[in-house]
Amino acid sequence: MEIREDDLTGKAIADLLREHLENMYEITPPESVHALDLEALRSPDITFWAAWEGNELLGCGALKELDPRSGEIKSMRTANIHRRKGVASKILEHIIQEAKRRGYDRLNLETGSFPEFAPARALYTRYGFEYRGPFADYIDDPNSVFMTKKL
Image (cartoon, rainbow, N blue to C red; front, side):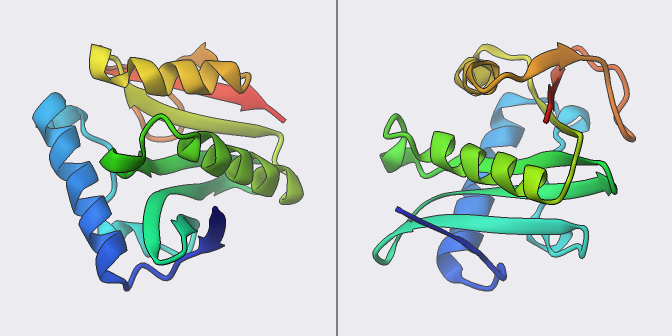
């Protein structure tokens, strides 16, 4: 598996992100969906990575700088056919290492509270993330779970 920064111009990435957004809107009420579309992910404060095996896209993840000392994990997604193969763990490890390299003190994230998000919450807990209240521009929402990791 190779994880590399991505410029968000490829068809495979666009397809995976479209699948991601469609899935979020299937599970979560629209007002509680915080997943970013392709254009929003092109923001200069976001770095986006894709995991590849040869020419096959396995998954993706992004790191948004909230301020010079903290970041937020965005757009974590594993392609359906590659779930349960450790792809998300590798991408998460990559993002955590990059956050440390940048000198961040804290890494935050928002994920869903529905049962479909239980595997994501379990992954983040395994990597030392703890539950917290809303951060940045988020508001308290029963459909969201907020987590943080001290680095």
